[in-house]
Length: 393
Image 1 (cartoon, helix red, strand yellow):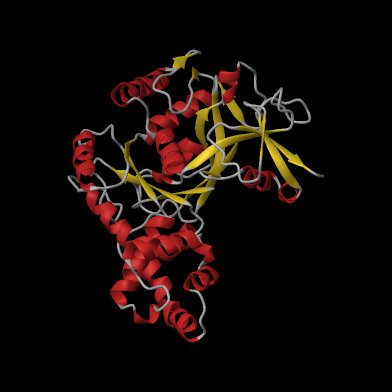
Image 2: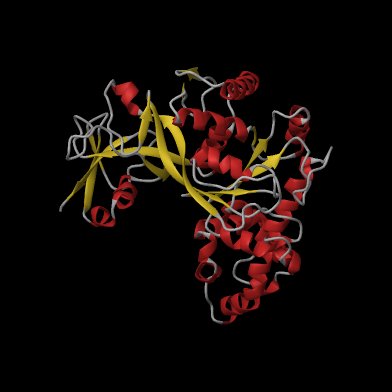
């Protein structure tokens, strides 16, 4: 599970990345600070069943006062500029890195103080950055498909092969699924049996819609603390059909650093923090600034953005596999040790394979630990289910 951070240079992507992961990321106020993709582990947060069950959990990760942190990989790629698909800036590298992402977080300078090239400016319309970035992604997908389109359409029509199979075999690196392809064909009313009759506009529309299906996007409206931020945010929400989250990555980074130094008590995503140690004047000034952000917006927006990307755009749920259905423990006696991310609609058998391929192969059933009821392979799982997997091994 990978979330890719995208956007023009100098919009705060690397600050967002460091705030989310505390990875060693270079942050500077000039374009193309990020050259090679930065990788790190961020987290989605969810309410752990330990609160409901009134037990103390032993997570292979982190659970703070009933808030469970479930790891996801974060990918901060080089900044994107107009005509990146033609190689401008670090465009080709940016686009290649994005193949791995399941969902995109567009870190946008909502203040309008950074233009599409990543240069400082004033009164820039943030909407322009969204439109050019989407166009670059669409051109990227279109270019990929056009290189192979004649071969694909010929094999479908002359050799009686399935379009879905041909696309999957050639473009598996884009994380396309058969259902994605079918959904786009239905939505656009395109004939999957005679792709040779598609014109350039059909191919372009197909590529664009497939990009939207396979690389869904949420907007992190960063630098919301700057004076122009709120007004631009309200205008932007009227013009886009994507989720837009007000965000201040700089404030979240300050909180994470203070938390790491045991200066404060803070659960990422929450709207408040508690000072637990003496602060220097500089630290106090910084946290006073952060407190104003929290008061105005309810959070810094960083954790909310990640949660929205994974839970809402990708439709993931969290499930807890255990070995003892009565005590909710693994074989070592650890309570609720593992939290697994699965797509909505996943089954008990899917969970078994997710835990380990051997467990999936030996799967014969499962137990819903809350009800004590035995369930079969096709039992659909729900958010926060606790499941014991039964195998014949």
